Image 1 (tube, rainbow, N blue to C red):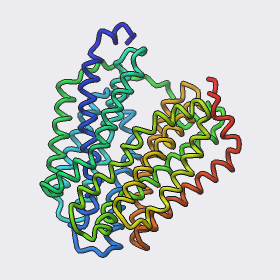
Image 2 (image 1 turned 180 degrees about the vertical axis):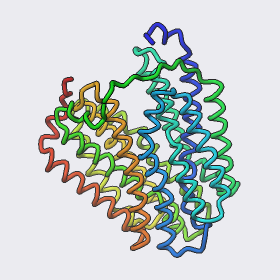
Image 3 (image 1 turned 120 degrees about the vertical axis):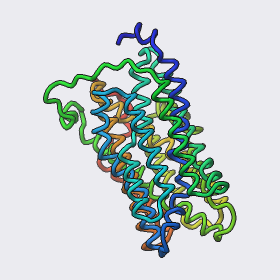
Image 4 (image 1 turned 45 degrees about the horizontal axis):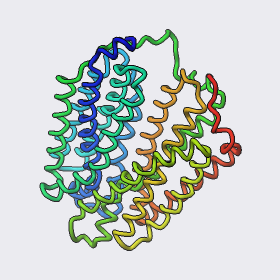
Amino acid sequence: MDDAQREQGPWKKNLYILWFCTFVAGIAFSEIMPFLSLYVGQMGDFSKQQLTFWSGAIYAITFLITAIVSPMWGSLADRTGRKVMLIRASLGIAVSMLLMGLCTNIWQLFACRFFQGFFSGYIPNAQALVASQTPRSKAGTALGTLVTGSVSGTLFGPIVGGILAQVFSIRNTFFITAGLLTVVCLMSAFMVEESFVPVEHPKGEKRTGLLKKVADPKLIIILLVSTMIVQIGNASISPIISLYIKELMHGQGAVTVVAGVIAALPGISNILAAPRLGRYGDKHGSGRVLIGCYLFAVLVYLPQGFIGSIIGLGVLRLFVGVSDAGLFPTIQTLLTKNTPPETTSAIFSWNQSFQALGNMFGAFLGGALAGWFDYNTVFISTAMLLLINLIFLRVSEPQLLRRTDKKVAS
């Protein structure tokens, strides 16, 4: 499809519809996070160690399955179209949310989270559909607009989820979330239009050969591993944050609402800081931003395990969003600058898989450490892990500050 055909097509209509759908999907995917570990506690009479372990496992299984099946769904989307994938993902996750609300024991909940991971992929397929239908001259603006939908939804989701759980109960919040995703499914099926042409892959093409086209495969691998480690740091907190807040509040008050607000704070500062750090990196060097944000992350994670007040924890979580605003986009920028154009999409799909693995390992790590020791151990170990990652980057890539400001020629 050339640009003239795209210009005459329904790309604007698709953009508006999918912005709303990704906004709702972002809310639905993130609104259960503030209280999922509290819901786990309702599935049985667990000790603190058992509760934190199961909270980590319940978080992790979804991301493990997502990392495994994402390449399969991506290959299928090339053959069947992205609209089918939108319907598949939204309907599948709606059913999994409905079943979560009906769970009566931990194994049923574990199976539902497994099921959710298997049907993941709504937002990436929405982005792919918009990119494939929009005129190339307007693709950047369209994709930039679409991303604000999912980011905004993910930002407000924990707050919405905390309020819904407080007003309607945790169990009923799963039913409400299933309803929201059903609306997304119906809008995707009946309002989104796609002119699909199957993607042809040359015979014998293997993704494992892509690194041979990159000037410095070692740097790419290091950056992908860094994505995973940064996400491990973020995800290690998720299984225990509401339990930690409940402990700080002595089990009194609107725990789910407070947990939702604190879970959303990094997203607020992320949105505010990301454009500024991006401009600074373009002017002064992406490597400099990366190293500075690693150090800042270590400094803000470390005291979270010792803070004695909700307000203090909220301030530090707000600062976490600033470090994330520099780490994730800068790693992606460095990947772009150091890969030829024909491999960028594939390398970015690897980056998404490494991020999913980070979610999985982080959830397991956070749940296990909190169970074996205490909540403060999770924050301390996260800070140490990021510090080790920074040292590894500097030792393995000593010219990082100088070399990563040069885009690799194709």
